[in-house]
Image 1 (cartoon, protein in one colour):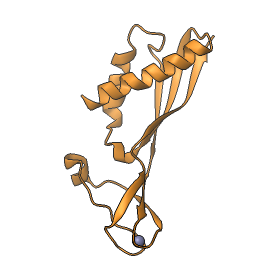
Image 2 (tube, rainbow, N blue to C red):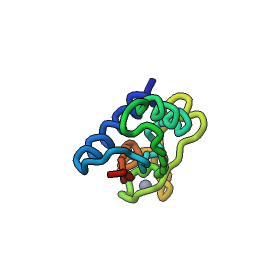
Image 3 (tube, helix red, strand yellow):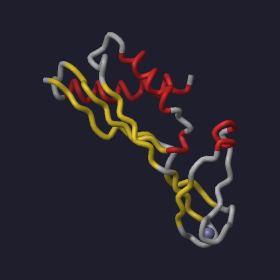
Image 4 (cartoon, helix red, strand yellow):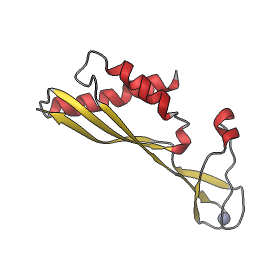
Length: 123
Ligand SMILES: [Zn+2]
């Protein structure tokens, strides 16, 4: 389960921050996820609930913000925003095309990472 280990890592990051601030509870976790991580938000929500059960983050709200993927073209050097097609979500494979010169010679520069942006705590 991709989402579960992911949710667990998010929880660990949030927990470490909460401990640093002597918090008793985590009430909200704001998370930014790149679209190209292939994470399914609904599954992540459920996994997060499971991962935080019995912890200081139990019942915390997980707010997910999806950020678009970005590619850099090796031909013209320009950046384009990309989104996944339904097929790519199934196979996890996609060649992205530069929206400026239509070249397929591109590299992904954003959208494959997730960041805990903020957490809300109770002291
Ligand atoms: Zn290009």
